[in-house]
Each structure stands twice: as structure tokens, then as C-alpha cells.
Image (cartoon, rainbow, N blue to C red; front, side, top):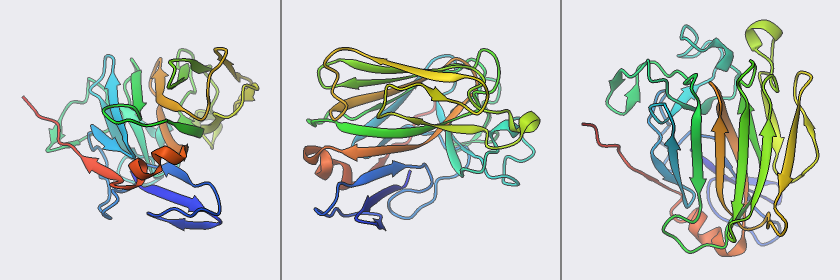
Length: 250
């Protein structure tokens, strides 16, 4: 992931100004040292102070290059070619072949599963504020998603995103993804005739979120998590921005 600091109209890879509140965009494009993230990469990584874990009947979180005409153009997931660059999927059990840390055929799992970003894992932090997230390929019946934000007190805000919230680009054309606003409880219309709804527990704090969980009921992907770090968490999120861990293989 590349972490971008956006403040006072200036975009930079690192640093923070005091003239405006900064945001961080987790877009899965490159490591902070300039190294790009390869198509098919296993994403068992700590990023921006958050641990990332995957669960369910899948092979874990992986990178899928969604570029139209890119390396996955002739692969099994043409409905993921939405032109967002690298996106995060849950790798299909039926396509396990790997070369090193890379799945040879990135392929989102029809069984879905869960991806959790945890800003409280092993570190003392007051949490972050989440602004939005892109959800991709919720284009068929049974492909619902649930997005759960949990604050430092264990209280939750939950978004239920129904099937057909995005178009199938093979049938309906672009965009094939939608941006879910994580700052509101209002209904949010999708690309088709469906609406995402939200609810929260009384007392939920949107500025002290410790975990973001995205649950896919079917094949899908996510991208562009926009974060507003709390002041106490800023140093944690920017130094170091990134560490990479290699998964042990049997």
C-alpha cells in the first residue's frame, strides 16, 4: 500500500502539517520505500500501524491488478477490471498455485470471507477516523457485504451493503464499484436500484475507531480506504509507514 498524506492541498508520501487535518489513503499500489506491490502478492502485512488479517473459506488477502488490459485481462475475473489499479481480494481456494509470495492467478473467492484492519493490535493508540472505502464487484445476488467499524470502547457502526450495489461491468458497463461514505448513517444508493444502510450503537465514537472489518458474502474486492488519524496516532501511522512480513509456507 502507498500511504499518502493530504494536507492543505499538498500531497506527499510522508510528513504532516499543522495547518489542516491530514488524511491517509490506503490504495495498495506501492510500499513506502518506492517498491511496487506485484499482482498476486499475499497481503499478510502491517500497514499504517494496522495489522491486516483474513479469515473464512479462502486463501487469504491478495492483490489483484484491476487495470483494464493489464495482467488479469485474460483471467477469470473480468468484472474486477474496474480501472482502480491494485485492489484487495480474498484469494480463491481453487487457484492456489504460487510463485514465491505471488498467486499465479489472482482470483476472488466465491465463498467470500472477512478482512480486518486493526489499529489497536500491539500498540497503544486512540484510534482513527475512517472517511470512506471503495467496494467492488457486489454485482450479483448473494454478493452482499457488511462493513463494521469498532471503536476503542467496543461499540460499533455497521453498514449493510446489498447485492447489486455495483454494476457488473461485463453486462452493464462501468463503474463496477462504489464509494461507501463511512461518516454518515444516511442511506447510500448504489449503481443499480439498491441502497446501503447504516446503524450504530449508542455512544459509538467515529474518531476512535480501532478496527475496520469488511465481510464479503461472495466474490468481491475493496480499495482506497481513506483515514483521518487521531492526533495521538499520527506518529504511529507515519513512522515507520510500512513493514512487510513474509508468510511461512509449509
